[in-house]
Image 1: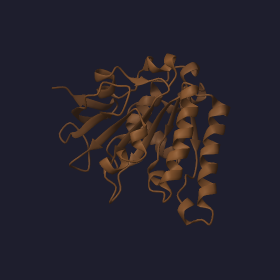
Image 2: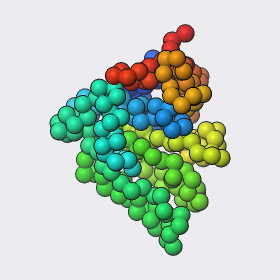
Image 3: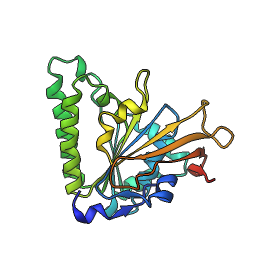
Length: 238
């Protein structure tokens, strides 16, 4: 990270991160790891929402149908279409690398995936980028190749001051600590979400942990959190 970016913090939209660290580093790389319906998408939308102008725009790469993302944004009263119309948030739907491991030349396909990623950055020139489903890349059989390509894209984004947020969904046999030991250890920090019930609300809060790798306060922070309709992710301060 260049000297200018390394000291510049931007609002993350994550209440625990903004309270304890003051935000994300501009040009930094962050992961949100958690099970389904734990609030990963809401945190990503809150990160995108904090891009308040074209100068701080967000490119949002999603594997979901766009109407599903619209529904999620409505839960926190985010008028996503207005941000899209203003050019502040750009949604780009892509198929993702779901079948790469089953193709004859998976390595070539995965390289193409990251090449296309760079092309989108060149076209839209965002200040922030969200990749809403990085799980399938983590599970890809050639982890060494993924690591090399991710380091390359990470350096590419740092030089341009683009802050990246990557969402990883927990799967059977894929624990948070195992993910951290591979790709996510290359990031500035990981935000890990856990829950004990189907929903995460004030009556059934989950646990959010923020774990730094480099650049931030070395201490780990944790808090109970919940998702409040019309407001988004909230933490329960001690």
